[in-house]
Length: 439
Image (cartoon, rainbow, N blue to C red; front, side):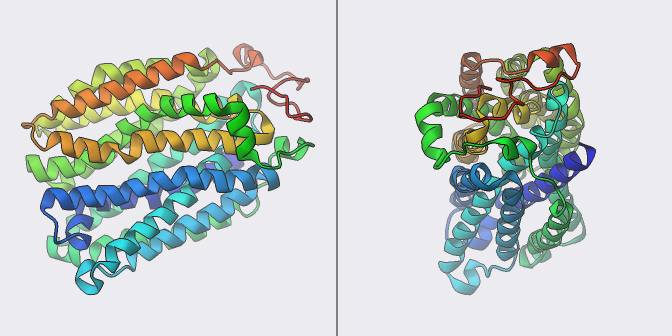
């Protein structure tokens, strides 16, 4: 389990590094470089629109790679998705800007961002299932949380590289070539990830399935359609919170409040580091008290903290901005630390890779794709404190709270007792022979 968890963490860190480095660049430099004929606001909106395309592609990637995962195994998904995302990220770093090739530049940027999203849409399901389906029931939440730490590591890597370049290069150098370096680094990280994953074993749960779904997506829609919609709505708040803190706030604070790029990146990175460290702890609480109670608590905390978050951001004080971000990300991780165990437990093994990944990535469309756009538009006519953004985030948190309330608890009974018990028919760990095993 430690080897599996480490490889899954490293892989998701690399994949999310690719995804996050684009978000940081979109907030800081892509607007003027690829949409120079737009006003500053319109250029930022256009850059965030290309950022959102990655989220739209993620459910499609989860369908494509989920089919592979349910039909041919979880392990191939990890390798191919990493290659796709890494290649697209390196290509962004090599892309000529609008000044060199005109309108072809933003169009190519859009296509490459879409390919990035396809790869990431498959990554999460494969990494989470390979870990969760190896883990003992009484520690499934803990072991499954390690892939969930990966996004925090990837974010810190992405922003650390940008921060180092921002601190050592002039604005002109950063705009001319410095922004490309984090994208080029993705190629080295992708090779490292492939090496780490080359010797991972296939999931034992997958190998035990005798009657595999012919077309997993059709079965998911027919049998689990309501469940997919509920999970998407439940996860929307977490995505909205995370990308408000890590992406939109960078553009807002640097452009509207005059906070330096270095200060904002440092505040966000510090908050994300604490969040990553707390992820396994929250997952252990999920093994002890259940997945659903933690998700409900996280949504409630988010609903209460969104107005303080934007108020603290509006002060422009680094210490207060960090405090606001930290509270928001603690609410986020309370929900998302247990999701890697919760979502797979909701679906039967024969369609688990497709169902869990589609629900997870549809939540990204609802909460992640549109939030930077909506937040930018809402904040345009506000004062220093964007209260409209706080109201928007609070509304999404309440929506997610209602969706989680309609979902069942899935923690195995033996997990509550914290003792391993051999699998028996009907358990999540038992083979799925007739497609009737419940979460």
